[in-house]
Structures are given as structure tokens and as C-alpha cells.
Image: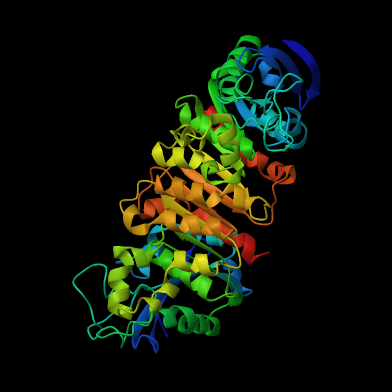
Length: 276
Length: 276
């Protein structure tokens, strides 16, 4: 593991690190914020999964999460959104290939050799973090934005017991019914739609739900509402009688101005359960 | 108008009054909490509509709303849920007739002569209140529980400009598709379902929405979830991109223990807009 940078930040440290990943078969970079408490004791972990076109860096610099993570004494992990590099397959579209891993394990060519973002985020990176930093991996929570909200919700529901709580900002909520989903699942997973279901938050909510609290914020003036399909997930949460809150925030769009506006709520939401 | 009782309460006055109603053609009783500020200036009004089997008294004594209304300087109105008296039609069932007005104007016998709860709550009682108390009727908000949540939502959406904000606790959310609705609308309004639509919060949300913020709380362990149909309204709110929050509160039932647990949130929600 290489240290790319470490910056003092809200009394703690915002670091950027890279390592050779077995899951994605390339070098991966991630951000990690450690609050001051981590100098003394292992701290709980809040994952933040980013959206289309993002690297590890966007949320780290624009979401404003460190202020609240510092206040509560929680670490923040910012993984990249896909494998990267010259030897890694790509596509000219912004929503396929590098920057658009969709948090799945690709089974189809040309994606299969590197696009194993599920294994990377669910298995390899947690193990690396637990081995190298003062983190209490028994206390993890997860959030994300857009494609990352999709990732957060699908990881949380597919890994019961892993996360105390899950939240999302404007998640891709029902990708099997959206052009943000059908295109990518078809490319990465193939045409057999039975392999898609475990990567659709609405379908997972209907089928199994989440064993903990859920918080979703969606901007009411989001340009991508037709692709995100918040109504499908809201219906599923309430039909499931899931412990959950779904908020339509009028006037907000899909940007980090939206994410940062509600970040305090999300960090405090997770902190309540991480420290319960 | 007769004063039934007045009790000092959180620095203000909890009153109960009765009057001869032209709308319902019988004597009606209501509760009114006036905070201390009303001794000096007209105060904003928060309506609380009650549920099946309730009178004006249930919420007045069990919802715990006065504490927060006093803190914010807001009046609370607690109307009865139906006409009452020996000359008023009734039914042996708890969910039809007296105590079950459903906030509609009945057109069918034997209900039509007295069951005009829509006109009573939307027109007659507001006029009476404005004439007799230190209330600023230009600043009104509305909430309610169960059948009263249905009433609050349908009044708010059918009377644009009247209410700054609307909230509900476990509302009957989609009565045209529920045994809490079909039975009563059939009895009060007749079999022509086109007359039912303006009394269904989900249908109204889909059609027109509300020109202001909406807050809904629903208990996850409510025995009546199948009758309340929260998922239909949640879907409609989000599909409409309505400024709204829908919260599934795990472990809470349909009782006033649930209502009182979240009353502070609802009063502070409305106060934000009443004093904007």
C-alpha cells in the first residue's frame, strides 16, 4: 500500500492511498478520513460510495462529510467507482466502463477481467482497511450518491449483519427498470436478468429489506428523476414496513450542493446506530 | 357558542366549546388550545383532525401537542369527528356513522341530513373561530391521525392556499382501495366512485399534489397497515416530486403513544412554515 497524500483535516487526517488489488487486477486508489479519536482507539467506519464519473476524490473534497465525521468520531472511506488504467476496458459513454463500475462483478467480456467492484468493496478493501488502520470493523455503516446510493443499498441488503444502517442521496433506485441499469447490467452481467436482481435496491427491498434503519434523500428538482425512480423504492420501503425515512427535498438537484446540504443529517443518523 | 370548560395549560388555555352548527344541523363540540401569546396578538392555527371513534377530546388529552404549541405560540383546534345526538343517524359498527364522519358531505340517506363534516371543518368552524378568538386565520396548518390524517391531507390538497403545510400520523392513505373507505364512501356518497376521488389522498397527490411541505409518520407495527396503505401514498408523493417526507417508524403502533412520540416533530415542522 502506498500513501499518496495525508492532510490534517478537522483535527484528524484525510489520507489517499493506493494498492494493488487482486479483485480488480489493477492498482486502486481510495480516500480515508480518520478522526482524531483514531490516534487512540479504533473508530467506527462510514463508507461513502460515489456516483457515475467520480473517482475516490469527488466526495472527499465536495461532500463536506469530514466536519460531521470529526464531530462524531467516525472514519470515512471513499473508494473509487471502477478499475482504471490503460489495460482496463473502457467505453466512450460516461455511464459505462471506467468511472461506472456499478458495484457489480462483471461476468461478460471485455469487462470480466477487471470489473469486480462488488468483491473489491465488499471483501478486499474492508480487509485491507482493517489490517492497516485504527478502524473497528465490527461497526460499519454505508451511504452513497446516485450510482453509489445504489451500491450502498445493495451492499447493505445483500450483506446482512455487516452494516448497522444504510442511507443514500438520490440513489439509482430501480436500475432493472431504468436506462441507468439495463445498459450496464446487460454489458457487465449479460442478458440473463435473473443475475440482475441482487443489484436492484427496489427488488431487494421487496424481497428481503434491511435489518436496520434506512434514510434516503432525493432532490425534487433532480434532472435525473426519471432514471433514478425514487417512487419505486419509496413504495417498496413502505410496503415492506421497513424502518425507513424517504425525504423528497424540494428544489435540490443531483449535485454535491444537494449532498452537502444534507450530509450532517446522514452522518448523525449513522452515528446514532454506530454508537448505540 | 357555549363555553364547556377552560383550563390553564402550558401558560395558555385549553378550552372546550359547543355551538349550533348549520352545516351538520346539530350541536357540535370542539377543543381549542390558545397559547399565552393569544392574550396579546392573533396566533397561527394548527388543526388536528382525529380518527375513528374519537371525539374532540381524545387528542386534546392524549396527543401531548399543547406543550409544543405553547413553545411555538401556535393555537390548536380539535374538532369532533362527526355530528352526534339522538336525532342523528348511526350504525352499530365503530367505523360508520357517529364517530366516523370521514370528513365528507354525505349525499345519501340516512346520512345526508347531518353528515356534512367537510363543510363543517372547511367552512363553518374556521369562520366561527376567526370571529370569536385571537387567531390569525391567514396562517393555518393541518394535521391528523388515521381517519383524521385522511381528512387533513384531503382538505389541504382540495383547498390550495388555505394551509401552509400538512402532516399526518398513520393516515388512511388510499381509502378508495381500502375497507376503511369503500364502505363509508359507498354509504355516504353512493356508488358513483367519481364522487370519491376528491376524498382519497393518494389520488389527489397523483392528480394535483400540495403547494407546500408534507410530513407523514407511520408506525411500522401498526395493526391497520393493510387498511391504511401507506405504500400507495409514499409512491404517489415521490412520483409527484412532492416536497415531502414519509417516515416508517419501526415498532410503533396505531395508538396515541405513537402520535405523542412524534408530536414535537410535527408541531415544529408546521411552526417553521407558519412563522416563515
